[in-house]
Image 1 (cartoon, helix red, strand yellow):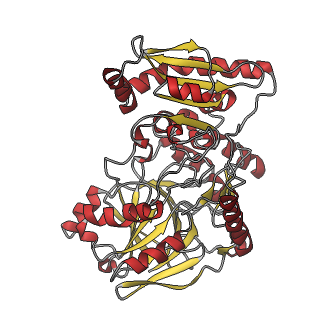
Image 2 (cartoon, rainbow, N blue to C red):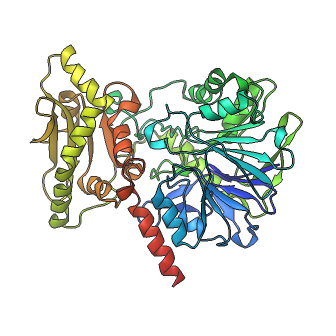
Image 3 (cartoon, rainbow, N blue to C red):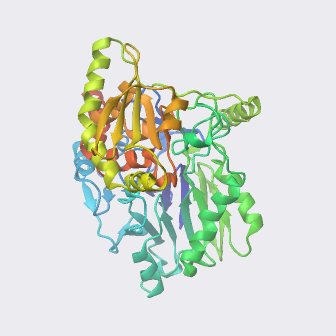
Length: 492
């Protein structure tokens, strides 16, 4: 069986003359239809669509826009079956059907052949974070040699207990290769990342990363932790993927520690009897005895080496310069009336947000905090930045269980006064609430937060849960409506 790497978390699997594609994004960017700062795939690639082979099937692991890309599907023959898991949102199926495809829902644990490979989908571990809990993990084996084991795509979620049991009980063979996502989005000093905590920085746009062992921590989480929790994986080779995008940090370039081929080389020197692979887009791998080897390259997709080197140089120069990147606005209100409407949208959401906070681990921490320190009932702040009027702010009063208007402060004062909070441009926040932007678009780039405790209990994590596709497909999928309108408009 051959394993072709498309970049980020995309794969071509089986016979490369008629492969099965997994989570393909075959365009240079995604999000162009709605976001003025569309996301670029990294490492950059040359894709020759005229040489794209006949595709046997497309598997979509989940609904996030870095895995589910309608413009890419629009490039394919409508006879290609699109396969999704049983928990995929109905809206995703409807969007794909609007393009003229037939969609097949494959039950978890049910084996089915597509092209030259057998596909089995598995649900993630229930401990997976909520916003990734609809992922379908994918086990791919050569249909002619199913007992030899294959590649298990453990993408964006914790290892499936159902898969663990199937291997342990001998229902399926142990995988020969385990693909894991490194989506750490590590930022250098001067750049604020999505889940970074403003309490750890010395200034508003100052250094956010204080972990001196970041690279080792990434490798430990990807490799060692998996083996500790699933001893049957001892002897399985690893493939590191993910992190294959540039967020809106133009000055910085790519995230540090996002060169999976570099991480893999380091890891390979620290392991024995297993291979750790970090493929570049276009690489084709296969099994040789107990090892994984590169056997060639895709004829229709390869790295844009000139652009790749330029981006790495940009990042190195940025890190050496010790510069900072200030918080940006993705949308800017052109008039007072537009900004006024945005503020009304925000105010209409405050009751829901208050309830969500109080039901969450963040809210529990804020309530307990009052038992430990002599602080008032105002524990959480939402402060929005405005262009045509003064900034606005609302504080969550624990005693009243609701947000109440308050005077905006300088950010350093807000951090000192409130245990937790967020600051964001008013129009950007309103657009998240109405579907003009996704929460993933604003986090880090256009949104700052502070909190006490674990990053997964942070305000941004709460907003991921509350406004991501898992909970609010009605607004999160507005961007897919725009994609469909763009595609169908082009067809006409």
